[in-house]
Amino acid sequence: MSTIKIKQVKSQIKCPKNQKLTLEALGLRKLNATVELNDTPAIRGMIEKVKHLVVVVE
Image (cartoon, rainbow, N blue to C red):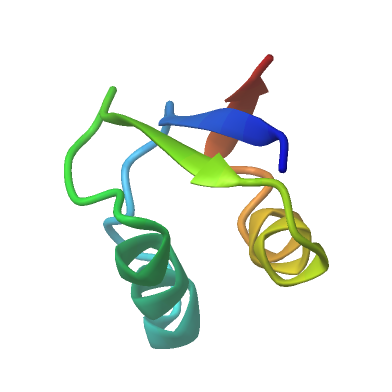
């Protein structure tokens, strides 16, 4: 299975609670943090929900 790297580029301050929980579920807790996750439809959906806060580094 392929993997994707996700980097948080904007702060989660003043974001709705559901977006903060989505970032935490992705494993992103700090600004400029990078995680590598399996490329699944569920992960892609989570990225779409917080696309203004993260960047996909492939």
